[in-house]
Image: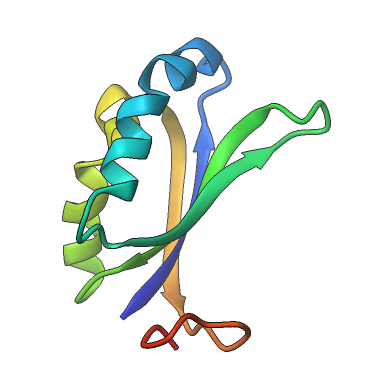
Length: 97
């Protein structure tokens, strides 16, 4: 099952995001990663203010365990994380609708 996950950065977290970005990208791009799509949410100044991820997980509890492994989560980057089931209907990659 897929989940849409939106994460809002802490207000003071710009440097923390930059410091942990490489580890976050390595985690999200690793072979077999449950992260199927993602990228930064940006503010009016085009600077990151959060993240949007599409994550494959068995259920909400599994999703929590997956997200707990994200270096951004481990570093305490996010002020808020929201998730809900997602059905990819437009331009879905094979096997992910």
